[in-house]
Each structure stands twice: as structure tokens, then as C-alpha cells.
Length: 332
Length: 287
Image (cartoon, rainbow over all chains, first blue to last red; front, side, top):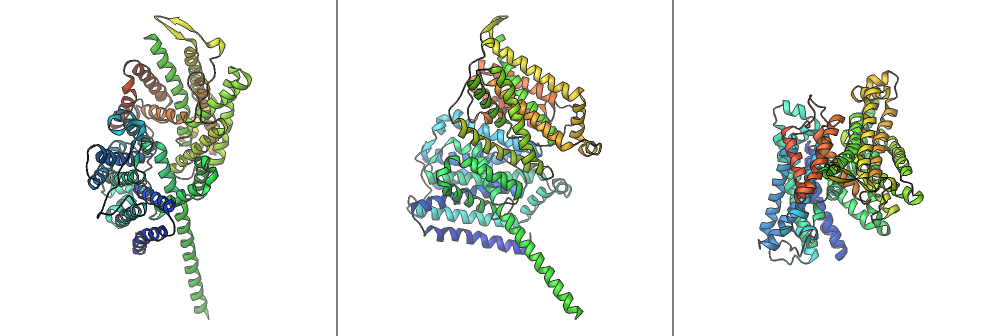
């Protein structure tokens, strides 16, 4: 990664949360809910893109991490009386461990098989939560009355204040993602995406890197799940459903996979679109499917990819112009 | 005992029809068709519609597979053909998008409720086989699955088209240079797979409720079959479908609570132990 990009990412990591805060003062409760959803799903999408965009592994099972984080948080606070802060950490831990487990099983196989395996393993988690662990998880009904993590004695049950708390976490996650992408570790993940064989030949333990990336990604996803549970006071088995994995995948592709801001842009687009379609929201997923197909066909880099392409082309053009000017000046 | 065996075999045949399509599409196009389950569902709904309109089950057995084959051909030409030069992931994403759209179309046209059709008169009732009564329709299902499976096998192994198919699987450039239109072959294969899925959906229609969402349940089972059998391996798909079908039927009989979980666990053990699939004995094609 070039130095310029690192600076750009750091700037974005601070500008985006600030923009959310500023935006939140422009409206009331509905806007706060929408922004909160965007922030939570953005955290999830960032975690997902660590695997999908950066390491180049397709996963159809991220709902499992998201869901297990949500359930760990809800069960620990509701049934075990664990404090919210500790439960939040536990959610991250559960996501991390499950991520590592997925990694260990699935990394035995390559490429396309992998997507299938993650899907099937997530189905297993869904089955466990919805049916087998009913005693703890409330089965298909889910668990209602989930509380929110408190901090500094603030009244987090005020939606605007909870949004601020979410933005704080969001900021930390964004910073973490920026640092990770710029770090040697992130560079190796990127190398594995570009050419796993070469990365292996260079002496990097590819399986280890993939596995740890899965663990980190799982942890971030688990955190997002727990925060969503607090936001809507509810966790349910649909959080581990394949459609949830599909949603985060669509968001990431829409915004631009493998780019720093892409997942966030995708989530914002997704949520604003859903809010905007109004009357035809009954057909939301069909509409989304059409958009998704169009993006896959004609805009595989997503919105951010498109912007990057534009910027690159303009820079190339400008450089060409400069060279041409120098040449003509030299001639005269 | 015999009854359970027959049920197991009939489940296996359904799974085989679906997994065979999935596996030839993968072998030929290099595409994992996530939308395969949805094509199965669309087949089921078309069958319901045909039976409701005409009352003729046999007609639906013809119409639904052909209609879905045509739909599949269209999808392949419009949506997958532009993507073959790109990464495999893109094709996977595309078939995922197709799921969303087709699900929505079905939901809009037929609604969220479930539909069913009566057993065709000539196939209702039961006949005694050894110690138990067996539904005639189950036997018909097994027979139909066998015929379709054998037909597919014969097509691939013994016909000229089959030779071209197998050639185009491994050496597309060579086949193309012999003057054979590989892209048309791809369309045919995708249509064939879609048609098989719809055939399975049609045959299933008198037995199970046809509803939105049924495609996903079945696609997970299909993935289990193709992973166990080895992707792109039709013989492996037969063996794995038999295994899973029998496990499902006997599990339903003896430990219904644990059947789902144990299937998943078996799959995971297989992945850890023989990632190339249970029934792949040479060094299998890696995806």
C-alpha cells in the first residue's frame, strides 16, 4: 500500500464517523435508527470484507459469526447476569473462536468448495441455535428485552446517545481496519488474495494467515451482532440465517469489495435504498437482486471501485497532458 | 424396514437428479450454480400450475422441465456468458443474484402460501413389497430417477454429444479449435441441468408442499452430496446421493432429532479427512 492511500484511509476513518454524528443532528428518531443500523451493519461489512475483499475468500457463512456474537451477548446478559461490557467482549471472543473453527475446517479445501462449506457450516449453527439449544436461545422466538452496553453512566436507552456509542465503536473498528490494511500482516493477506501459491513459496504460512484472518473477521462480526442485539433489543435465529450472510455480501459488493470505504458505502446505499423504495418495499429483495446482477455484470468494483477507476483515469490523462506540454515546450 | 429403504432410495433419486445437474454444470462451466434449488422450486410451481389448469400430471412432467430448461438457457446466455473470463467468484455472485430475483418472481406470482397437487390416479395407492406396504408413487419416483440418471449417464458416456461435452470440460480451447461452438455447448449443459432440477421439482410436487424457500433447503443437501461425491464427478454423486438419502430415511425413523446435525457432522469429518470427496479416487479436480 502506498503512503498516500494509508493517509487517505486514516482520514476516512475519522471523517466517516464525524459525518455520521453531524448527520444525526439533522433529524429525529427515525434518522437515528437508520444511522444506527448503518453503523452496525458497516462494522459487520468491514469484518466480512477482511475475508472477502482483502484475503479474497468467498464466505457465505458470516451470519454465523454475527449471530453467535448476538446470542452470546444476549444470553450472558439476560440469563447469566453478566455485565454488558463483559458480555460485549464475550461476543467478540465467541465470534473469534467460531471464525477460527470455520477456518480450520474449511481451509482444508480450496476456492469454490469453500463457499459451499461456509454456507453449510452456518446452516449448522442456525440449526443449533434455532432448535438444539432452544433452552438457552429461545428457539425460533429468539430472545427479547436485550439490554444495551452502558458507558460512563450515559443513558444509552436514548437512541441518539446509543448512536454516539455505536459511532465510537465504529471509529475504533475503522482505525483498526486502516492499520491492519497498512500493516505487514494485511499486506500478506492481500498477497494471498493475489497469488496464494506465490505467497506460500515466499515462506508465508498461508493457512495460518487465512485462519487468523477468519478469527479476526469473526470477532468483528460478533461485535456487530451484539451491538445490533442492543440496538433492537432483540436477537433471533434469522440473524444466523443465510439471507443475513447474503445481505452483508450484497452490501459489500455494492459498495466495492476490497476497498477501505467500500463496505461502509455499500451499507449506506443498501439502507437508504431500502428506506427510499417505500411502497415497493415488499419486493425489496427482488429489486436488490436486479441491482446486484447489474453491479456484478457492469460494475464489479462497486461504487468505490468506479470512483477509483475515474480518479485513476483522470490522473493518467493529466500526466499525459503534462508530458505533452513539456514535449511541446522542449520543441519550441 | 423395506418401507424405509424405499423412502431412502426415493430421496436419493431426487438428490441425484439435482446433484447431477449441479455437478455437470460445474464440470462443464466451472460454475457453482447457487440458483439450482430455485430452478427446482420454479419447476415445482410450474407443475402445480399445469396440474391446476389441466388436471394432467403427465403433461406437467413434460412442460415444467422444458420451460425451466428454456429459462436456464436464457439465464446462461444473458447473465453467465459475459462472466466466464472473470473470476469464479463473480459467477457465484451472479447465481446468487438470480436466486433473489426468481424467489421474488415466484413470491409475486404464486404468493407465500404452500401449494400441492394430488397424486396422479394411476400412481396412488400402495402395493406390498416383502414385509411392508410401499406407496406406488415412491416406486415411480425411483424408476423415473433411474431412467433419467441412466439417460444422462448414457448421454455423457456413449454419445457424440457426450464426447464433446467431456472434451469441452477439460480442453475447451482444443474443442473450440475443432470447430465446435463451446459457448452453445455451455448453454445446452446449463439448460440440461436446469431441466433436471425442474424434473425433480415436478416429481416432488405430489409429495411435498411447494412453497417459496424450498429451494434453499434442498440446495444445502445438494451441496453436501456434491462435496461428498466430489464436484464434477457424476458417479460420486450417485453414491453420495444414495448414502445421504438412506441416512435421511433411516435417521428419520430411528433418530429424527439428530438427523440434521449428524449430516452436517459427517460432512465436516469428510472434509477434514478426505477433502477431495469420498468417491474420488484419482487426484480430483480442484475448484
